[in-house]
Image 1 (cartoon, rainbow over the protein chains, first blue to last red):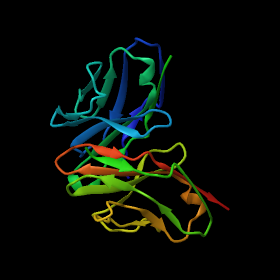
Image 2 (image 1 turned 30 degrees about the vertical axis):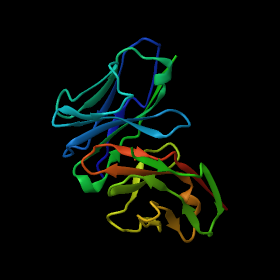
Image 3 (image 1 turned 180 degrees about the vertical axis):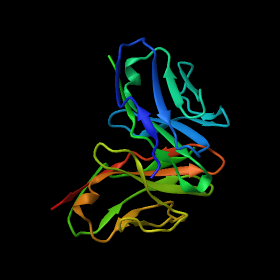
Length: 113
Length: 109
């Protein structure tokens, strides 16, 4: 069964540093997403991406965040200057059509120290 | 705004007993409802979507628009059902999933 792949599985970074979280969505999917889950809290939507542009973003997704699909296969989330409160599990997801739901990756645990 | 409420953070039942994980939503239109499951140290996996009306691993869920609920049920719990369960809502035309807080289900032997 096709999978969404995320790397790395765990990233530790110092406050103020830039991080790039990587995702390889399922190859024939057209819609891509990032979600995050702070420890003990619910999964929260960050951003959706379709046709090479952001289609929706949450209030969490401020100017320090950006997404890119640089080469037609990877889908990246960049956090420019990390803060302690960015520590969370970040999930990438993709889907092909409306009715079939999302396929999630296994997540990247980001720890900002 | 859309909202999903899972009132139980923790639910513990014995093997063979019936299970019901509650989910209520807030949305004035016609939502799309999903249940996702996350086994220990694994990814979020789609368990059920309401439009398909299917049964997966013995679980079913019925959308009750009058009560704005989408409770997940299984008549006889198994130990391998122990996991974190998330109810989620999506609105057609919007892109995002809105998740509930999740319910950690533990099946005792």
